[in-house]
Amino acid sequence: MKKLIKILALALLILTNVFPLSFVNAEDKPFDGQKVRIGVVGSEDEEIWKDVAKRAKEQEGIELEVVLFTDYNMPNQALTDGSIDLNAFQHDVFLENWNKENKGDIVTLAYTVAVPIRIYSTKYTSLEDLPEGAKIAVNSAPTSLSYDLFSLQRAGLITLKDNGELLPTPRDVEENPKNIEFVELEAAQIPAVIEDVDAAFIDDSFLESTPFEPADAIYIYGDTPETINLDRVNNIAARGEDQDNPLYQKIVELYQTDETSKKIEEVKHGGAIAAWDLVKEAKSAQ
Image (cartoon, rainbow, N blue to C red; front, side):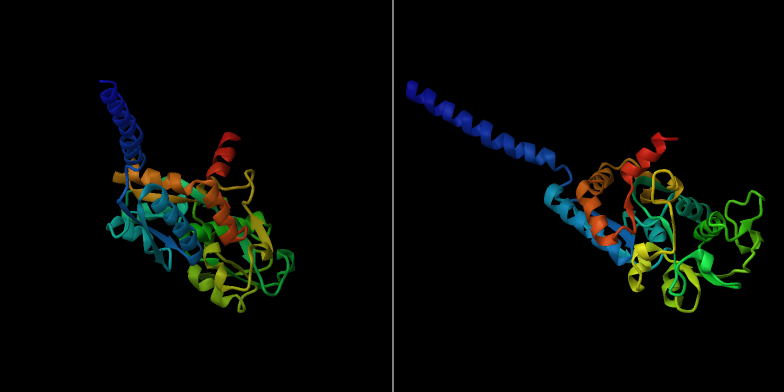
């Protein structure tokens, strides 16, 4: 009888130490084997998200495929038609404008990075040095164009009409003492003309194709909790029907980590700032 009791006790010990562990592991990885496709713009963001994908596979068993797009016009359409499940390339103003123009229902799930506005030049070291009739390359996308103009106004180079226009264009410039010429181009085209203009707004996603580092900018704004524009913090977006999708929320959780913050610093060299905590800090101060 004692021998039988010992055998049963040993069996119970094995059961409680082996089988429950496998059950716990299964419960800890509820998304094991699931696949998610996320669209990004720019090789730097691709590198950051591939690092997240590696951790997603190792820690959660999730197959996160990173899909690289070459411009800002494609990822939302791809998300809408189901070619991808998530995207991470835009800020809320861009998203809201896209939804309005395309009758979309894409929503923000969470925030990724803040990208301060930066102006670069191969000819001048400050905005004050820009000559009469200077050519400045600006992003032609409506939301970006307006922000570029607001930035030039903040810098004291122009004054916009006080007409309540949320998305001003060069037609809304009221005062232009230096007669600045605005060269409107798609973001991806701006780096190619840097030698042909006096200064340029270059998006961080396309900076690698230039000789510049973020620290080379002759003007910067939006790199602190006090100056950050919350509407223009980049996001992770999904279709409206997937706003509460647990799998996609797990992707957010995997992104918003110290490991990702370090990867952003490594890849972006200060060009973009990990924003999830920064957003909380800025909002708490409001």
